[in-house]
Length: 107
Image (cartoon, rainbow, N blue to C red; front, side):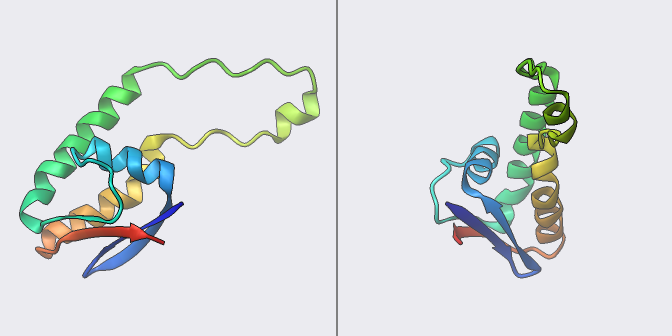
């Protein structure tokens, strides 16, 4: 599933699992489609930032051991939830500044 976030200022598309995780971190149920009213965005942003800070304190799980050196070199580093959240945080901050609602739907 793909989720499309949108405000009057723009749109953002994200993989469904990451999007639902971030929605839940904002205090939302994670259902798609949905919306957060402009008046509720500051609290949602605060909840999201708090959840990301808490997650950063938890050490990541150990990487599986591999014996193939070439495979080890080619492996891309994992994308953290904080990195996935940055475009959404930027969009929410812009929506707050412009007094705009945040909406999402299946992409």
